[in-house]
Image 1: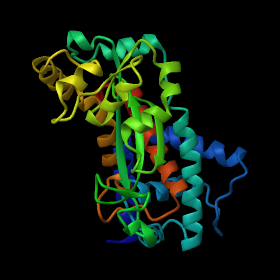
Image 2: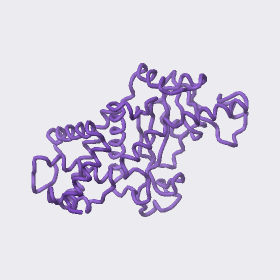
Image 3: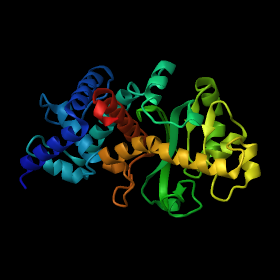
Image 4: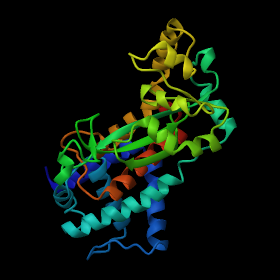
Amino acid sequence: MPALTVFAQWRRDIIAELHKRVYDDMLLYLQRFLRTSGHRLWCQQRPDNLAELMLLAACAHDMLAKSYNAIIEAFSGQIRLFPRAVQHNVRVVRSAMSQWAKSMISLGTRREWDRDARLRDLPEWMAAVRFWIDSSDIRIEKRGRRREGSSAEWSGKIGAPALRFMLLSDGRSRIRKMWGGYSPKEYDSNWVQIERQFFEDNLKGTGVVGDCHFFAAREFMRDPDLIAPPGDNVGIDLIRNRGFARNMAEAEKRKADVSCVRSTAEAPYSKIKRIFKMLDGGPYHAWREKMSELDKCFTWACGVVNMQIATEPEFV
């Protein structure tokens, strides 16, 4: 396929996946970032649409999972690029887009939390729920000790080296807070204990839905109420002590209720991994660049999800 045709197809695919309003907002932010931040794009040619071309190059790499060599070839009808230059330019775009994304992510207000929670059909005993929490591991390249199961980067969840990210989302699946990347060896309940001050300072009086990996956090935090079910082999004494249920019948019913509303926590990750193929965890999409670049890419993806939700109600 001729280079111009490949470029045109990629551009159409990127804009279709992002949606035009999101794409235009990102481009406007990047242009302003380049004027004010001191960052420069490397290129011997300086076409008027250089910023847009490099935004498309970054999207082609992170969203479409295209290699830098494939990007150089596909863009050859538009601009002459060299490997070091295109990699530098993609890093500049990620820096801009991660800052853009941070403007899309805020904790919000109780009024917003209440409104969005009404979108979910919650059982009466979960009436206080305003948030959903979940973690996900993003595959990184096997290198050196990362190949070993004992390494800090080894994820037992995916059987490969990874970085873990945590998302707190609301009733519209809008991301209200993100953390990461950090070692996938950090158990979710232990992580809550580390971040306990955030939850107690900002989310008091609410309920937060999590999976069974958060159950142990009920031992040390009850407000906000972390509604996390016990695992399959947990006895009734521990279930009572952690305040999840009074008897096994009630525990089973509540576990089923939590399972029914868990999809709200998983929705942001499914959108992120669908739009940004370099984050989908596939064996051919392991992250090969600096971990700081992965943080920026993941932050960017969170911003895209939030702006789509804000501008397109059908994304809820």
